[in-house]
Image 1 (cartoon, rainbow, N blue to C red):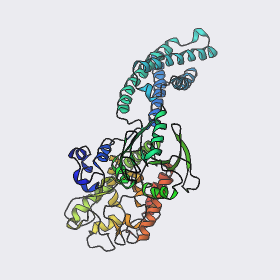
Image 2 (image 1 turned 120 degrees about the horizontal axis):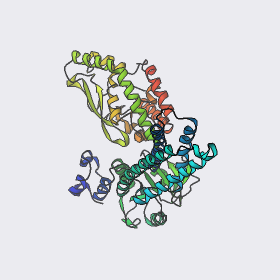
Image 3 (image 1 turned 45 degrees about the vertical axis):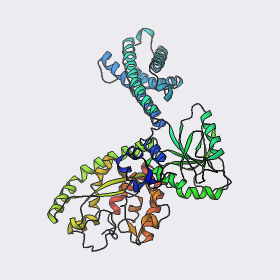
Image 4 (image 1 turned 60 degrees about the vertical axis):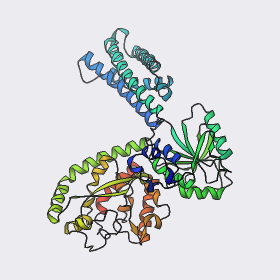
Length: 508
């Protein structure tokens, strides 16, 4: 395997700036780095694409119908018959568009064919509307002017949407962003058979990005069916931190139970789906379920948390409540900024590197609570009771958590969520050991975006983490939150947060 000392410059320069530092990736080969560099963009959920397109179509149908009514009737309040038509038309359109395969990505990328299918389907919608109208009103009472305007306006909106969709989907498919990216664990014949089976399925949406295997080249060849072996399973954890992959497919025989369990202990901390390519009754995995990738059956070992529409819902939740919080709390933030400036010289805000989603480094904003010449950027020494490094104003804003309020700007930028596991500093310690050395599977808390507040914090596990038990309890609560996330759970945590701040026992 290529060592770090002989990486070609091209392998490094392909990566974003934050990934070019050699000590961060000391074990990855040049080939693995180059593959990772090609996988820097997130994939796009087909479920979200499908749902967004359907929503657009429904809005165009209803919107064009209302516009046609206003133009032809000169009124803003539709009559009963028009309301019935506005309700029936989108349902008919979505059914006919589905029959015409207009929600298939392969059709979405075609120009003229897609437009023709949409136009024919739209014409059939109006044939249906005319048929319904004949059942309700006499033929001479059918609002032909309204329907003709509706047809033209709606057709224009649908065609415009399909033209834009063709451009977007075409680009995304060229970039491979509409496929799920998978890495195989285990090479040899088992991997070759799985690859052959996946490639036989014409509509398979899996892109195989490489193979990782602990066995040497005598037992596991350096490439299988044209896909390279990029490293060992330990290398895979490092690889998955910088490459945006969606799925790990384990091809190791189910009789190797101990080996699979060892793999899971290493890999479950990653925010990806993990699937075994055969059934295994004797393995005790949580929330086990079966699924298919193409025609190949798999056992779902671990699910990627907060995916597809849940990601969008959580982002909308974050933006909505962050804006509300900033509007409500801005007077407190302004007064705090003035107090910090008057209390001690130095900047008002303190910036600190912390671990974010999938161990990515993010810069978190806080109000400065320490003297400028004694700030601890890496949090190598925990703040303790009556700590001399903390200013007078700093003691108050730390106890009340006012120092955390600038993180609302992190929420707006997308590096933090409002609710999630709290981001920890890089050198944070408990019992004189780094957190990851104290808690087994510590990095599993980074499977979702960190938050300003969280389940651990409202249950009393905030502030100083000077003992192993404290950080263990915090991580346990973080994992519970990840495994049980919902919008209602986020709401509950958010509204419980002000009450939990009344407990300042561990906040110094």
